[in-house]
Amino acid sequence: MDMNIVLSGGFLLLVGLAAGRLANFLKFPAVTGYLVAGIVVGPPVLNLVTHDLLRASIWISHGALALIAFSIGSEFTIGNIRRLGTRVLAIAALEASGGAVAVFLAARFIFHQPTPTSLLFGAIAAATAPAATLMVVRELKARGPMTDTLLAVVAIDDPICVMIFGVASGIAAMLVGNGSLSFGSMILQTVAEIVSALGIGLAAGILVTRFVTRLRDRSEAQVLVLGAILATAGLAIAAGLSPLLACMALGSAVGNLSRHSEAVFGAVKAMDTPVYVVFFVLSGAGLHVELLRSVGLLGIGYVIFRVVGKVAGAAVGGALTKAPAVVQKYLGFGLVPQAGVALGLSLLVKQQFPGIGDMISTTIVASTVIYELIGPIFSKMGITLAGEVGTARENSV
Image (cartoon, rainbow, N blue to C red; front, side):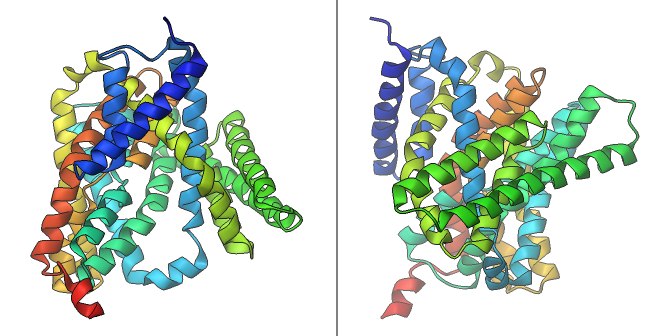
């Protein structure tokens, strides 16, 4: 019996749940289970996912990306920035830029990829997945200068990555679409698009802040906020702007302006998990196995040079801000994991750049599985070398 799209949707949720639990049992992040499950049930292996659902995945991915960006923006508040301090902001900016620059240079000059492709690879390399790092910190009951700095840096990494991607994708789009533009014109147009996307998100955030106080219960808040998130993303897409930046600005505006921000974010968090599960399973199902051979060396290079760039960037940031020696030496090892935001950005590239998007998306999905497998190992190694294993438990006695 062929599965219809409704049956396929239920099947993906249940398979994703089982795979996530199995991954946790094996001490891996749930997202790794979702991706592997998608690869197994998708066209690459068992081919149990309908073509209708794969075609509809573009809208599912847009919705999931909008929710992810909104959640990222919720952390980008004045209070959080003050709490993190200038040292953490500087280190986060340099470690994200280090990964981006290292991968861009490697893709362009070692693997001889076109400039737009190299820019997009570099921008995605800036992202770090906090979930795996948090899991390791809790498991090791770690606390200390390196661990505390690590947790602060991963909290601010994703907003920085989204901004880097906004600039890189804008320049890449202009290079692909119109190579006759001057560099100055490209920068000005990119800045204008970023400001416009942020403006849409800010305006939507102001409206949400004004109307949320008039709602009677949590269910109405969920409807309002989800509608605002999707509408903001849709307006940005229609205007040819970045839906990620727009939704991040929406989340940041609500976090900074609303007295009920915790309730708003809680209402969204209560309903986002099923969307994320389907999103990640479909990401695995959309893996183009036939492209893996052609991107093999490039994929290996992406994995290696991103780690090198992250470690070097964190070390430079720590040295410039005069951070403790353990931060300078070992912080970069905790920044290896990469998952949700990178996958989201790769799917956005797949939609916006049809000529090169499949290759980039396939490389990122494959490397994400590798990163989620080796990331916790690197994080554990960094915390262990810093001598901070078990210190949380000791300090609490």
